[in-house]
Length: 197
Image 1: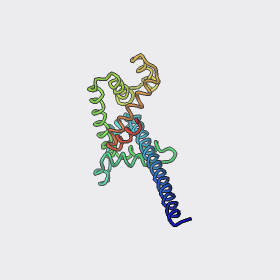
Image 2 (image 1 turned 60 degrees about the vertical axis):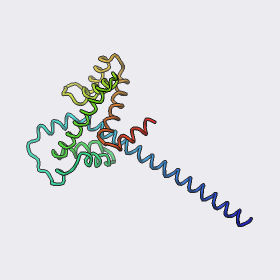
Image 3 (image 1 turned 180 degrees about the vertical axis):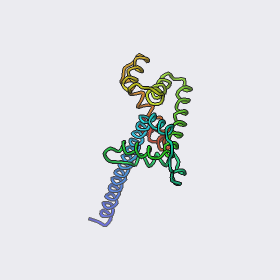
Image 4 (image 1 turned 45 degrees about the horizontal axis):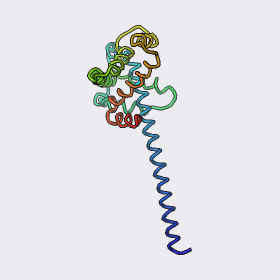
């Protein structure tokens, strides 16, 4: 075997190894991004499911001692900290941690309300009946005051739109993805676009 042959083998092996390492790194990064977006979707659903509870918490809070650092937190910082929570019962932990601080709850609710307004305007001005229906589903299911169960509301929506429950659930999923993109900004958008491809 000549020196050139050895060099060629070394070069080919190094190239193949580098390509394999790069591919593994890219698939790991894609997996981490997918997990991060899934956590954000989960937290968006959790925020919407507890919207009325948080609103009542703000409306009925009598007194709250706040820490200086809480008053200066942004909605993005609070939301970012939320989706990093892990382990069993993480949803309950997130809900309880928000309820403990009226200041944090107000910041989050202001952010959610602004993003819901944007989603509403987008849905109505899109000129697509499907988008209007999705806004109506989210609004009726999570935002408007009601004594009805979510099951009853979903049944009513399916009847109102002459469709089945599965379609209403798909509407919820699609709307939650778009709301997640609004709540989490550019990260939410890039992950949403990646899921659609």
